[in-house]
Length: 432
Image (cartoon, rainbow, N blue to C red; front, side):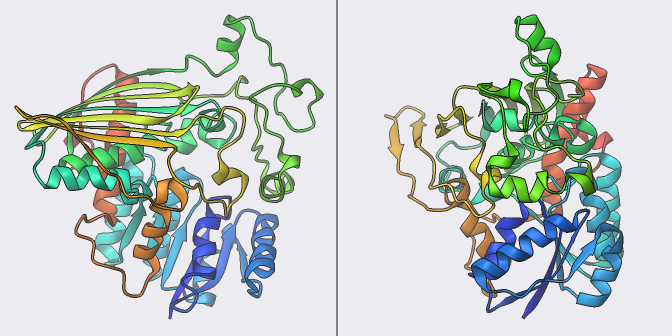
């Protein structure tokens, strides 16, 4: 039976803890939790006991990570900490003899990426990066079509992702709003999108240029629109009544238990005003890239839209495939993955996939229905991670450190381009 320990017990941890406590309970065992906050670990332990009858797991402070490894002897460590700290726990776990599963993004800058590569070379341990979007039926279907040759050689990718004013705004309430912690949306969020593109076209970015700015969120933008949001946070703030961007931590059990009750230990405010100060990330990004294969990319991310979803068109020398996905049209509720760590979205609200062959009529392609988080992706990804005999995967969706690096390199290069206002050559950052 494989042994797993988890470091970083915020809301995202629930995806893995639930899977290990239920579906994979006979093949896997949880042996320990590690976090900055004892309150958060206690909250998860109570929940695991109440829902699944598990006895409390040993809980270790972040400074006692090594002791957790020595005392609980995990085979694999799951890392779900703040993005900028992923490398620390990945490297240390490997040096202590463990394989690692890490949340995306793998890390946030080049020096940390190099440290991870060096640890893998030094120890021989493995690293898996959880790109769950690869497992969503809509995105997997695109991969299948390209592999079947319906577009021929991919030459051009036009990709737009829209975040709505609940999900998009949430990145500006929490630690993600500070680039030093998240790498910005070009790394934290776009790592999903860049990984899909890399996977679809079967290549790695070569040159990157980016433009971006903070155009909607932040105090200066609100003031320019004649709006006033003088409060620092939302919870217990009478002036926030009626604010459609307000998030009240005391009105949701998960948010209260994981964040509000832990503030004294961590100092972390989960509900900062999206029109406040200290926001150092962009809310609009335009990225262009040339791939080693010669394919060209045009990427656009907007974090303040009235609906959420994506549109992508991939054109090759034999045709074109277009996909549109509407994930949400809700504007006033925070993303369910944050409200309830066990919540599963039932799937996309609408999706349409069309193939346009060269010199032939276009046709619609069906997308299989699926249940579970991220459009049905999460259960399939968890099966690949934790099943003792996962099914064959001809689409090669399981992602190693190489795929993890390829996706963040595009985002890191975009950040470098934003800083220097110049074209960035990816091989000058890190050679894959």
